[in-house]
Length: 350
Length: 272
Ligand SMILES: Nc1ncnc2c1ncn2[C@@H]1O[C@H](COP(=O)(O)OP(=O)(O)OP(=O)(O)O)[C@@H](O)[C@H]1O
Ligand SMILES: [Mg+2]
Image 1 (cartoon, rainbow over the protein chains, first blue to last red):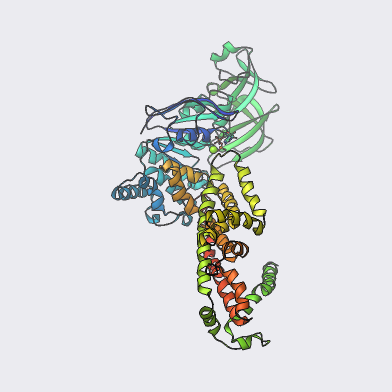
Image 2: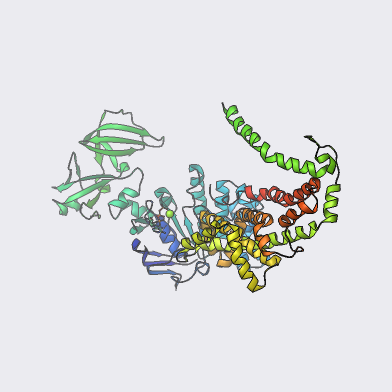
């Protein structure tokens, strides 16, 4: 178990800079998820922590030690790759024992540790098999087993679940979280799936274009997104974003309705803003703004309704089943205390 | 429709195999017949005898030359396999400046006919005292297949995902351990192919052997064979027996090597 400090870290490939000064402070035993769209630099940052990429600027500290120039094997980290990279010519047991062998661990201890990891992951029946004789989910477990036997200071995961089918992915999500609670090792986990990030993380790091956009607890990030990008990226279905300005304590959309604002925002009178409201924070009420139903998407547990007011489409999620059809008129009332306002210019939260 | 589509290639292959396999059949047939029967125009075996092999082994230095050939082939193919493996890996994974150019130059040497390669070898080996030596010949034979082997291994390692090496690096392996314990086992199919190719190139070489070996106790099989034809006074049954033994190692190598060649396990440790 160790803390990890990333300070103003940069990465450039030749003249192309892909990480522009990322800073993240990770406490001992935390489960951190790096999340962001494809190409934002998550893997690159993770690989710099692992020591597989050199660091163009800034410092990375594991525990109290600066590891910028420490080779991967001396960093006391274990990594699970997106493609698992199990050694195909070794059995499951040999795969898991490989790192211990290289460290000249005694045979007795190797056996003990492999047994223990196999028990935790339910790999006992497969120890004598080769990777090619395993299913995708079992390979994934072996990859984790290979990391666990090391008992490292930090676990690094690069999209370990992305090759599994949806159901298995959800199951492994729970299992991983449980594993973390059991081992209490610091975990840095990369994914582009914001649901994975929300459900597993103690803290999430939202990245875009090589920049850390926000770092915080999942629900804090969800409730108070720091900018428009985070607001749109975290949450599914995505937050509604409507352009307009503030007039007399009301939000007036450029092409349609106006909505109430809480009194705190009065001081921004006349400002151009982007108005954000999550689909589940809109209720139907007779005093609300009228809107036409365009599409209804029931999922069983809830229903997503896309409505149109003026030329603006707004999505609404409601838990109860309502009997509406496309073309019907509904009256929307966003909950004023759940509104997010962003400066149109800087895209930052007001 | 599916039936017909799968039948056509089989028919084509069967037709193709007739001219390919017939000489082999004829060789084996003649080797197993009495010398008198060989000249009778018959498609099937007229008589069965092992006397031709007996004659061959008793009256010629076949065994000596065969062991010379085997020695040269083994030495040169081991050198080729080791150099191709190490060199191909270096080309694929290090940042040697102008490595593509280096690889092209190596491949370029492949374009020269053997006779042209033989002349400088002759001059060089004369100075080094390697003329008339199986070791010298084996070294010369390396040039026949190293370019191809190096190129094949280079391509092979390029196509192999880097994550195996990265996993090994994180597991604590040194560069050399990574190569020896992870990359070499992964490349056994490709290395087997290189070995078979190098072995066959050396085993079948005539030109370099003719130029670099003088002593008839050090001749390799192809050269000795050309002499048998006169020595045996055109006894085709015995010559065919020699032919069969000459072709045997190649057959065995492909037969047993095939298992490794098609064992496509190089990607089976990955997610999909
Ligand atoms: N070797 C390289 N040379 C040049 N640019 C690179 C190299 N590797 C990555 N990049 C660039 O760095 C950026 C970040 O890549 P990275 O692999 O970290 O993205 P990612 O966030 O992990 O994306 P994904 O979710 O698709 O895996 C990308 O724009 C990519 O094009
Ligand atoms: Mg990635």
